[in-house]
Amino acid sequence: MFADCLVVSKDFSSNWVIEIKERLNYEAIGQVIVYKDLLEEDYPWLGSLKMGIACLYGDNRLEPTCEKYGIEVFALRKF
Picture 1 (tube, helix red, strand yellow):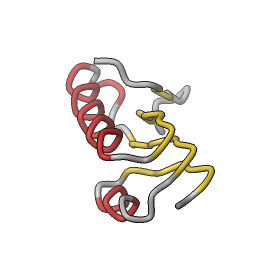
Picture 2: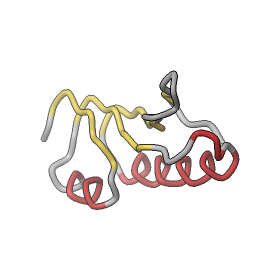
Picture 3: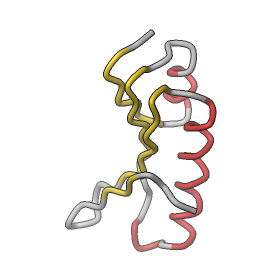
């Protein structure tokens, strides 16, 4: 299991698992959800992880699903 990016704050108060893709897609959504669950299980001291997807292109059809599951989308462009 390899998440693209794990951001851990000094005091462990705001930790993120972030998937990086060129375009927001189904794969990225599934990956970040699974990585969050596995990392929280394997490293409970991280606490509750926030989820994010960093992408060049967002997708207006998929962003509501991300919002529903608490996934922050960091997109440079939307289409």
